[in-house]
Amino acid sequence: VPPTLLVSGIGVMEDTAHAVSIDPKAAGDFVYILGETKDELGASEYYDHRGVLGNNVPVTDTALNYTLYQALSKANKQQLCASAIPVSFGGLGVALAKKAIAGQCGLDIHIESDLRLDKLLFSESQGRIIVTVAPNDKEAFETIMGDYPHVTNIGTVTDNNSIIINEVQADIDKLDHAYKATLGDY
Image 1 (cartoon, one colour):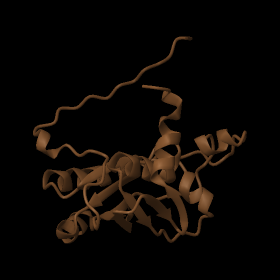
Image 2 (cartoon, rainbow, N blue to C red):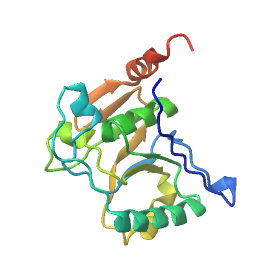
Image 3 (cartoon, one colour):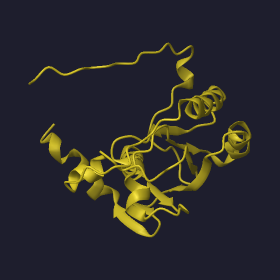
Image 4 (cartoon, one colour):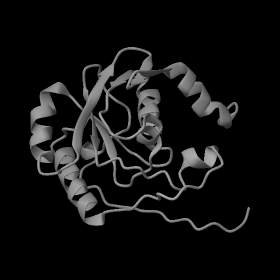
């Protein structure tokens, strides 16, 4: 293996009760995307899989993301987020699939966007986070996140065995099998 740069980030958590896992907790919880999805597929996993490099590489708005993370931290300290996952390699579609696999529960997602569906699902725009919020915490969560411009309720957690994104449906068991297939018998 050639030498590889490894960068790790470590932080101190004052109270582990504020830790949030990626798995949705209950059917009926709301699903939010925090941050803006743009046409930023340049050098993405999606384009790489298709043998394309692309031009629109993700651009990070550090000031806007910092504001988002501060608000999310405040919501976490009040234990308003049932689960959270960053949108990274593979984009929104992959992050939603990981959530569904982790919780073994369905997601019913509807996102309005001017982007084509493949760009919406696989853009790797930086700084986005998907969170789930219990119905009882919805108002408090939205109040805390209210000053941030890109907080969107995109659906709900279901007890079905499928993830539906804008009418595109995938079986969670098949996603789980595909996700773990490269691990062999581990």
